[in-house]
Length: 275
Ligand SMILES: NC(=O)c1ccc[n+]([C@@H]2O[C@H](COP(=O)([O-])OP(=O)(O)OC[C@H]3O[C@@H](n4cnc5c(N)ncnc54)[C@H](O)[C@@H]3O)[C@@H](O)[C@H]2O)c1
Image (tube, rainbow, N blue to C red; front, side):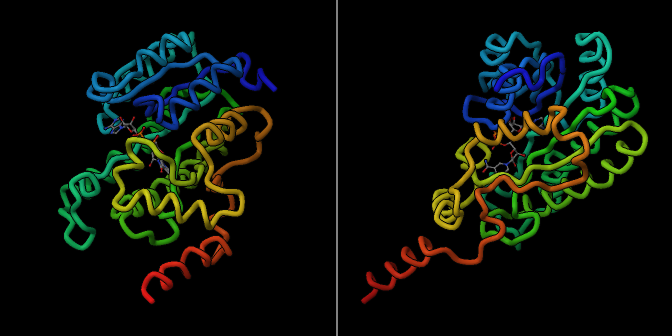
Protein backbone atom coordinates (compact mmCIF):
# COMPACT_ATOMS: atom_id res chain seq x y z
CA UNK A 1 0.00 0.00 0.00
CA UNK A 2 1.40 3.42 -0.99
CA UNK A 3 0.27 7.02 -0.60
CA UNK A 4 -0.35 7.10 3.18
CA UNK A 5 1.49 10.45 3.38
CA UNK A 6 0.27 11.99 0.14
CA UNK A 7 0.22 15.78 0.49
CA UNK A 8 2.03 15.69 3.85
CA UNK A 9 5.27 17.50 4.65
CA UNK A 10 7.78 16.80 7.37
CA UNK A 11 11.25 17.26 8.87
CA UNK A 12 13.49 14.24 9.43
CA UNK A 13 16.37 14.54 11.90
CA UNK A 14 19.25 12.07 12.11
CA UNK A 15 19.93 10.41 8.73
CA UNK A 16 23.72 9.94 8.85
CA UNK A 17 24.16 7.06 6.37
CA UNK A 18 22.19 4.24 4.78
CA UNK A 19 22.21 2.28 8.06
CA UNK A 20 20.46 5.08 9.99
CA UNK A 21 16.88 4.44 11.04
CA UNK A 22 16.06 7.99 9.87
CA UNK A 23 17.42 7.14 6.41
CA UNK A 24 14.87 4.32 6.08
CA UNK A 25 12.10 6.56 7.41
CA UNK A 26 12.93 9.22 4.79
CA UNK A 27 12.85 6.64 1.97
CA UNK A 28 9.51 5.21 3.13
CA UNK A 29 7.92 8.60 3.78
CA UNK A 30 8.99 9.72 0.30
CA UNK A 31 7.60 6.51 -1.20
CA UNK A 32 4.30 7.25 0.53
CA UNK A 33 4.13 10.70 -1.08
CA UNK A 34 5.61 13.00 1.58
CA UNK A 35 7.67 16.13 0.91
CA UNK A 36 10.71 16.30 3.22
CA UNK A 37 13.34 18.53 4.75
CA UNK A 38 16.35 16.57 6.00
CA UNK A 39 18.60 17.79 8.78
CA UNK A 40 21.64 16.73 10.76
CA UNK A 41 24.54 18.39 12.57
CA UNK A 42 27.05 20.17 10.28
CA UNK A 43 29.76 17.58 11.08
CA UNK A 44 27.40 14.65 10.30
CA UNK A 45 26.50 16.27 6.99
CA UNK A 46 30.21 16.49 6.13
CA UNK A 47 31.09 12.96 7.31
CA UNK A 48 27.92 11.11 6.27
CA UNK A 49 25.96 10.70 3.05
CA UNK A 50 22.77 12.73 3.66
CA UNK A 51 23.18 14.56 0.33
CA UNK A 52 22.69 11.26 -1.53
CA UNK A 53 19.46 10.74 0.40
CA UNK A 54 18.40 14.29 -0.46
CA UNK A 55 18.94 13.57 -4.16
CA UNK A 56 16.91 10.35 -4.00
CA UNK A 57 14.02 12.01 -2.16
CA UNK A 58 14.22 15.45 -3.83
CA UNK A 59 14.63 17.08 -0.41
CA UNK A 60 16.44 20.15 0.89
CA UNK A 61 19.11 19.65 3.58
CA UNK A 62 19.35 22.21 6.38
CA UNK A 63 22.25 21.80 8.83
CA UNK A 64 21.31 22.15 12.52
CA UNK A 65 23.10 21.16 15.69
CA UNK A 66 20.23 19.90 17.86
CA UNK A 67 21.86 21.48 20.94
CA UNK A 68 21.74 24.97 19.41
CA UNK A 69 18.59 27.05 19.89
CA UNK A 70 19.74 29.35 17.08
CA UNK A 71 20.12 26.43 14.64
CA UNK A 72 16.75 24.91 15.54
CA UNK A 73 15.03 28.28 15.18
CA UNK A 74 16.57 28.72 11.74
CA UNK A 75 15.68 25.15 10.74
CA UNK A 76 12.00 25.49 11.64
CA UNK A 77 11.58 28.91 10.03
CA UNK A 78 13.45 27.94 6.83
CA UNK A 79 11.46 24.70 6.60
CA UNK A 80 8.22 26.72 6.77
CA UNK A 81 9.50 28.86 3.88
CA UNK A 82 10.33 25.74 1.85
CA UNK A 83 6.98 24.10 2.61
CA UNK A 84 5.05 27.34 2.08
CA UNK A 85 3.67 27.32 5.64
CA UNK A 86 2.95 24.70 8.27
CA UNK A 87 4.00 21.08 7.96
CA UNK A 88 2.64 17.75 9.25
CA UNK A 89 5.27 15.62 10.93
CA UNK A 90 8.70 15.51 12.61
CA UNK A 91 11.00 12.54 13.25
CA UNK A 92 13.52 12.97 16.10
CA UNK A 93 16.18 10.30 15.50
CA UNK A 94 19.10 11.72 17.46
CA UNK A 95 21.28 10.06 20.07
CA UNK A 96 24.82 10.44 21.35
CA UNK A 97 26.60 9.85 24.65
CA UNK A 98 30.22 10.95 25.10
CA UNK A 99 30.43 8.43 27.98
CA UNK A 100 29.41 5.56 25.67
CA UNK A 101 31.65 6.82 22.90
CA UNK A 102 34.70 7.08 25.16
CA UNK A 103 33.97 3.86 27.08
CA UNK A 104 33.59 5.67 30.42
CA UNK A 105 31.49 3.45 32.74
CA UNK A 106 28.30 4.85 34.32
CA UNK A 107 29.80 4.72 37.82
CA UNK A 108 32.70 6.96 36.72
CA UNK A 109 30.76 9.34 34.49
CA UNK A 110 31.93 12.88 34.06
CA UNK A 111 28.93 15.18 34.66
CA UNK A 112 30.01 17.34 31.76
CA UNK A 113 29.63 14.29 29.49
CA UNK A 114 26.36 13.31 31.10
CA UNK A 115 24.85 16.75 30.52
CA UNK A 116 25.98 16.52 26.90
CA UNK A 117 24.21 13.14 26.58
CA UNK A 118 20.97 14.60 27.94
CA UNK A 119 21.30 17.77 25.85
CA UNK A 120 21.83 15.96 22.53
CA UNK A 121 19.61 12.92 23.10
CA UNK A 122 16.66 14.31 25.07
CA UNK A 123 16.60 18.10 25.62
CA UNK A 124 16.96 18.52 21.85
CA UNK A 125 13.44 17.05 21.62
CA UNK A 126 12.09 19.73 23.96
CA UNK A 127 13.99 22.40 22.04
CA UNK A 128 12.49 21.26 18.69
CA UNK A 129 8.95 21.00 20.11
CA UNK A 130 9.18 24.37 21.86
CA UNK A 131 10.39 26.10 18.68
CA UNK A 132 7.73 24.45 16.51
CA UNK A 133 5.13 25.51 19.10
CA UNK A 134 6.40 29.10 19.03
CA UNK A 135 6.04 29.27 15.23
CA UNK A 136 2.78 27.28 15.27
CA UNK A 137 4.60 25.21 12.66
CA UNK A 138 2.67 21.91 12.78
CA UNK A 139 -0.75 21.43 11.15
CA UNK A 140 -3.74 20.19 13.18
CA UNK A 141 -3.65 16.37 13.37
CA UNK A 142 0.10 16.49 12.76
CA UNK A 143 2.37 13.89 14.34
CA UNK A 144 5.75 13.92 16.06
CA UNK A 145 7.77 10.76 16.72
CA UNK A 146 11.04 10.26 18.62
CA UNK A 147 13.03 7.03 18.76
CA UNK A 148 13.64 5.43 22.14
CA UNK A 149 14.89 2.20 23.64
CA UNK A 150 13.71 -0.18 26.41
CA UNK A 151 16.71 0.91 28.55
CA UNK A 152 14.36 3.75 29.63
CA UNK A 153 12.42 1.16 31.69
CA UNK A 154 14.93 -1.67 32.25
CA UNK A 155 18.63 -1.68 32.98
CA UNK A 156 20.74 -3.11 30.18
CA UNK A 157 24.45 -3.50 30.79
CA UNK A 158 26.52 -1.13 28.67
CA UNK A 159 23.73 1.29 27.79
CA UNK A 160 25.16 3.72 30.35
CA UNK A 161 23.64 7.22 30.64
CA UNK A 162 21.66 6.70 27.40
CA UNK A 163 19.06 4.83 29.52
CA UNK A 164 18.55 7.98 31.59
CA UNK A 165 18.42 10.09 28.42
CA UNK A 166 15.71 7.84 26.93
CA UNK A 167 13.64 8.04 30.14
CA UNK A 168 13.81 11.84 29.88
CA UNK A 169 12.96 11.75 26.17
CA UNK A 170 9.85 9.65 26.82
CA UNK A 171 8.78 11.96 29.63
CA UNK A 172 9.14 15.03 27.39
CA UNK A 173 6.92 13.26 24.81
CA UNK A 174 4.19 12.88 27.44
CA UNK A 175 4.48 16.37 28.93
CA UNK A 176 4.55 18.17 25.58
CA UNK A 177 2.04 15.62 24.18
CA UNK A 178 -0.56 16.98 26.60
CA UNK A 179 0.14 20.61 25.66
CA UNK A 180 0.24 19.97 21.89
CA UNK A 181 -2.88 17.78 22.01
CA UNK A 182 -4.83 20.32 24.04
CA UNK A 183 -3.78 23.41 22.09
CA UNK A 184 -3.01 22.21 18.58
CA UNK A 185 -4.46 18.69 18.09
CA UNK A 186 -0.93 17.44 17.39
CA UNK A 187 0.16 14.03 18.69
CA UNK A 188 3.54 13.11 20.16
CA UNK A 189 4.79 9.55 20.66
CA UNK A 190 8.01 7.63 21.10
CA UNK A 191 8.84 4.32 19.40
CA UNK A 192 10.92 1.94 21.50
CA UNK A 193 12.90 0.13 18.82
CA UNK A 194 14.84 -3.17 18.92
CA UNK A 195 18.65 -2.95 18.90
CA UNK A 196 19.55 -2.11 15.30
CA UNK A 197 22.98 -2.26 13.63
CA UNK A 198 23.59 1.45 12.98
CA UNK A 199 26.51 3.78 13.73
CA UNK A 200 25.00 4.88 17.08
CA UNK A 201 23.83 1.33 17.98
CA UNK A 202 27.17 -0.30 17.29
CA UNK A 203 28.85 2.14 19.73
CA UNK A 204 27.16 0.43 22.70
CA UNK A 205 29.54 -1.82 24.69
CA UNK A 206 28.73 -5.51 23.90
CA UNK A 207 26.31 -4.55 21.12
CA UNK A 208 26.76 -7.81 19.15
CA UNK A 209 25.73 -9.87 22.21
CA UNK A 210 22.86 -7.51 22.96
CA UNK A 211 21.44 -7.83 19.46
CA UNK A 212 21.81 -11.65 19.56
CA UNK A 213 20.23 -11.92 23.04
CA UNK A 214 17.33 -9.74 22.05
CA UNK A 215 16.81 -11.72 18.83
CA UNK A 216 16.59 -14.95 20.86
CA UNK A 217 14.27 -13.39 23.46
CA UNK A 218 11.79 -11.80 21.02
CA UNK A 219 9.08 -14.16 19.73
CA UNK A 220 8.93 -12.21 16.46
CA UNK A 221 12.70 -11.49 16.34
CA UNK A 222 14.33 -8.05 16.32
CA UNK A 223 12.60 -5.31 14.36
CA UNK A 224 14.74 -3.92 11.52
CA UNK A 225 15.28 -0.26 10.61
CA UNK A 226 13.05 -0.73 7.59
CA UNK A 227 10.25 -2.16 9.71
CA UNK A 228 10.67 0.76 12.10
CA UNK A 229 10.24 3.08 9.09
CA UNK A 230 6.93 1.37 8.25
CA UNK A 231 5.72 2.01 11.80
CA UNK A 232 6.80 5.68 11.61
CA UNK A 233 4.83 6.12 8.36
CA UNK A 234 1.71 4.74 10.05
CA UNK A 235 2.21 7.08 13.00
CA UNK A 236 2.62 10.07 10.65
CA UNK A 237 -0.46 9.05 8.67
CA UNK A 238 -4.11 9.86 9.37
CA UNK A 239 -4.68 6.24 10.50
CA UNK A 240 -3.42 7.01 14.03
CA UNK A 241 -4.99 10.40 14.81
CA UNK A 242 -5.92 9.61 18.41
CA UNK A 243 -2.68 7.89 19.44
CA UNK A 244 -0.67 10.27 21.59
CA UNK A 245 1.60 10.49 24.67
CA UNK A 246 2.55 6.83 24.23
CA UNK A 247 5.79 4.91 24.26
CA UNK A 248 5.10 2.25 21.62
CA UNK A 249 7.24 -0.87 21.67
CA UNK A 250 8.44 -1.98 18.25
CA UNK A 251 10.63 -4.84 19.39
CA UNK A 252 9.15 -8.18 18.31
CA UNK A 253 7.77 -8.70 21.84
CA UNK A 254 11.09 -8.34 23.71
CA UNK A 255 9.79 -5.90 26.33
CA UNK A 256 7.12 -8.37 27.54
CA UNK A 257 9.42 -11.41 27.77
CA UNK A 258 11.16 -12.87 30.81
CA UNK A 259 12.87 -15.93 29.31
CA UNK A 260 12.46 -17.73 25.97
CA UNK A 261 13.23 -21.31 24.92
CA UNK A 262 15.85 -20.08 22.43
CA UNK A 263 17.65 -18.09 25.13
CA UNK A 264 17.51 -21.03 27.60
CA UNK A 265 19.07 -23.34 25.00
CA UNK A 266 21.95 -20.93 24.44
CA UNK A 267 22.37 -20.40 28.18
CA UNK A 268 22.61 -24.19 28.79
CA UNK A 269 25.32 -24.51 26.11
CA UNK A 270 27.59 -22.23 28.11
CA UNK A 271 27.49 -24.77 30.98
CA UNK A 272 28.23 -27.69 28.63
CA UNK A 273 31.44 -25.91 27.61
CA UNK A 274 32.40 -25.56 31.30
CA UNK A 275 31.95 -29.33 31.99
N1 LIG B 1 20.46 1.51 16.83
C1 LIG B 1 19.79 1.04 17.87
O1 LIG B 1 20.05 -0.06 18.39
C2 LIG B 1 18.66 1.85 18.45
C3 LIG B 1 17.67 1.22 19.23
C4 LIG B 1 16.64 1.99 19.77
C5 LIG B 1 16.63 3.37 19.55
N2 LIG B 1 17.62 3.95 18.79
C6 LIG B 1 17.58 5.41 18.60
O2 LIG B 1 17.37 5.69 17.23
C7 LIG B 1 17.85 7.01 16.99
C8 LIG B 1 18.68 7.01 15.71
O3 LIG B 1 19.88 6.29 15.88
P1 LIG B 1 20.44 5.25 14.81
O4 LIG B 1 20.50 3.95 15.48
O5 LIG B 1 19.72 5.39 13.52
O6 LIG B 1 21.97 5.71 14.65
P2 LIG B 1 22.66 6.86 13.75
O7 LIG B 1 24.05 6.97 14.27
O8 LIG B 1 22.48 6.56 12.33
O9 LIG B 1 21.81 8.17 14.11
C9 LIG B 1 22.07 9.01 15.22
C10 LIG B 1 22.00 10.41 14.67
O10 LIG B 1 22.12 11.40 15.69
C11 LIG B 1 22.74 12.51 15.08
N3 LIG B 1 23.26 13.48 16.04
C12 LIG B 1 24.21 13.26 17.00
N4 LIG B 1 24.50 14.43 17.61
C13 LIG B 1 23.72 15.39 17.03
C14 LIG B 1 23.56 16.78 17.22
N5 LIG B 1 24.26 17.46 18.16
N6 LIG B 1 22.69 17.45 16.45
C15 LIG B 1 21.95 16.81 15.49
N7 LIG B 1 22.05 15.49 15.26
C16 LIG B 1 22.93 14.78 16.03
C17 LIG B 1 23.87 11.84 14.29
O11 LIG B 1 24.47 12.71 13.37
C18 LIG B 1 23.12 10.69 13.66
O12 LIG B 1 22.57 11.05 12.41
C19 LIG B 1 18.62 7.45 18.23
O13 LIG B 1 17.76 8.22 19.05
C20 LIG B 1 18.90 6.12 18.90
O14 LIG B 1 19.12 6.24 20.30
C21 LIG B 1 18.61 3.21 18.22
